Amino acid sequence: MGVVNVTPDSFSDGGLYLDPAAAIAHGQELAAQGAAILDVGGESTRPGAAPVAADEELRRVEPVVAALAGVAEAISVDTSKATVAEAALDAGASIVNDVTALRGDPDMAALVADRGAGLVLMHMAGDPRTMQVNPSYEDVVAEVRDFLAARLEAAVAAGVEESRIWLDPGIGFGKTDRHNFELLRGIPELATLGRPILLGTSRKSFIGRADGSAADDRLGGTIATSILAATAGASILRVHDVREMSQAMSVVSAILAA
Ligand code: HH2
Image (cartoon, rainbow, N blue to C red; front, side, top):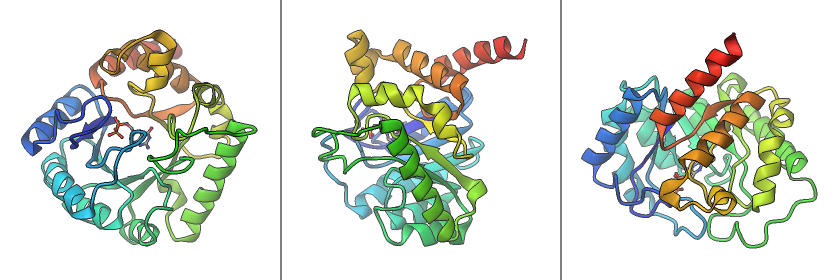
């Protein structure tokens, strides 16, 4: 899954693709590099990010989704607002990536169910404004697994087909570095929920704190965490650097197939 951030303030590429033409060209490039899915977002969820009004988010995302539909196998829209998701689905997206796991907008579950869309349910403790203020868990893997099990059950109860749902532990969303490490090691336990696991470690700050790298220099750590996760059972890797990630996965796949 390649990241297309149509935002001025995303933590690693904010402002690079705010212009729709630049975002579209970037999405085309990521698809050519091997992204099966393009994840288009118009609101940063980095720690401390300010919320974006629905009409502004829609204005950013809709033309980019419309132009990229058909360029990759699928387009996902990274939003927790039902009006934005609906416009994106109308424009050709087929997956809703909701970092609030259907808790952000009471209309989201029915929309996804009615439209037969794919759905990513992600774990987040709190909201982006406050989530990094003293995150605490007794057993982060068990608590995230239980949360995802409950959100999966709620989504299915709301009419979303279980076969269309992917689960994501939400690396960096209300977690200390240690929590992130424990979740990365706990992927086999999350995979027992029986749904594909999506993982987003790309360029995140816990990598920089582990290896001393800046946000624009975290490719090594992104590949390390993603490969570790993939071999532990993660199925979808959400990354900014699709070319290098595809290369790494091709080599790993060749080894595992031997
Ligand atoms: N991470 C980010 C955004 N959306 N969605 C899922 N399902 N999983 C993630 O780990 C995830 C996500 C944050 O990364 P990015 O989009 O690059 O930054 P920003 O939120 O600042 O735009």
